[in-house]
Length: 107
Image 1 (cartoon, helix red, strand yellow):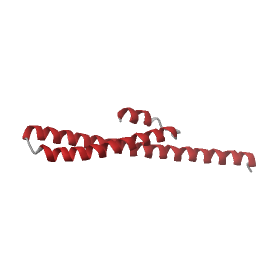
Image 2 (cartoon, rainbow, N blue to C red):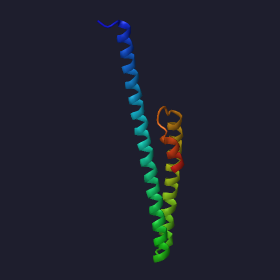
Image 3 (cartoon, rainbow, N blue to C red):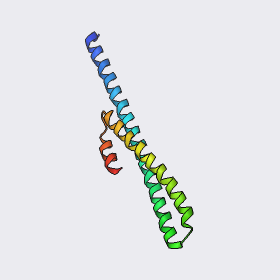
Image 4 (cartoon, one colour):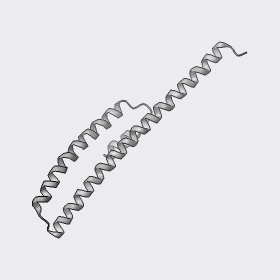
């Protein structure tokens, strides 16, 4: 029969490994969430840039375009600020994942 100390050490090791696994999964989930938010923001920016270029080439009504762009610009700025705050918070609570530096630089 194994000693109780050996059993306790193996149980402690198993619990610690399980904890590290769950923490790494949580960090990976957060990094994926941030990547998706950055991609959405980039897509919206590219869409607005294409719309602006389209209006320059085709000469649509600039009044309607300005209303749309000014409305989406404020929304994009608010989302960008919220995203930067989320990146900073996740970076501070980061344990195992180093993706946050890369995401911050990409942002």
